[in-house]
Amino acid sequence: MENKIVNKDDFLYPRGRYYGQVKPENLVFNANLQEFAQRVSYICNLETGGKLPPGEAYEQIKDLWKQLKRSKKELRIGEDPFQNDQGEAEG
Image (cartoon, rainbow, N blue to C red):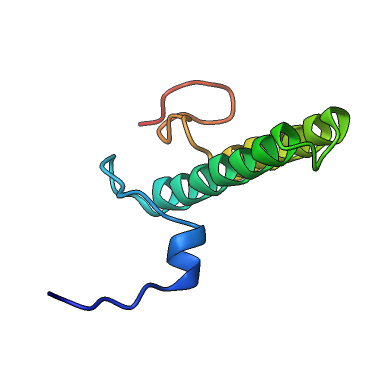
């Protein structure tokens, strides 16, 4: 049987494999999205267990959502790279 040393960070913050279009901005956003999901899960579990008031849980998730939206905008995810600022195709 193979002994495998488990890294604490790999256990606490698991990462799924990325199957989408491989571009640096997509990989970064995917990592941000996975971190968002993991942190929301922790917040939900703390709230469910009575360790975090519902209002505080809501505010924390709202802040995480804003960070994720900012990341998407900064990485220009979902934008057509061949359009200029006026929405017209270049070329």
